[in-house]
Image (cartoon, rainbow, N blue to C red):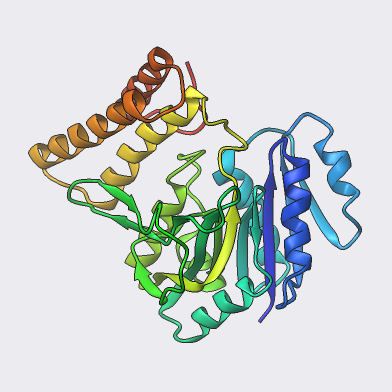
Length: 297
């Protein structure tokens, strides 16, 4: 089985170099490493080309978002005859045995189409960030499994979705359902992909003994209101697409999602309060108007 890894860079060349170094250190060799520069408009491209001739560089003239940048790399991976495509965030690193364990999970049955590791925090590697995602199409509630719990050996379990931070995807999944939906631009495209794969007959699993380390909030800072804009707009979008409902249920679900995002902006988000609430409301309005892709005025 040929494995092609895709790393999307947006003004984070130092992080990207570290991610590539972890791929080079993988005990299960990666056959092709593809780095996508997502219209960084800084010195990223020059620095990435210094990674070496064995690294394939794909350059975009514009920032296509995480979804669009990943799709550029996915298309290059499929063109290289990859059987499996490994997506790795630029601010993530894999343990040396991670890829091998993900591949082993996919080899159990063709019904498993996407496998991901347990994600832990770089500043506290004993703390779990995510061990898969539960998503309720009825309420639209999304929950990161295991978040905040101590790192421990876990079984491989089926989940509704996994984080796009690190995921290994069968070629058959991508050929059947396509890559990320570029309407999302940033966030929730991973949940959408996993749900589309499930409808096509492919399960997603979190592999409990595979681990990757994640920084988070590197391309869009923790304090950026844009993070709240995309979260609210795309949360509404993925719920609407995952489970179409009658007008009453649809309105109730949307109201719950808006309330959750507003509560997060007020209580937990690091963005300035007024800007954060405004970003959530703009995201809701753009969803109502059907305006997706990059954030617009």
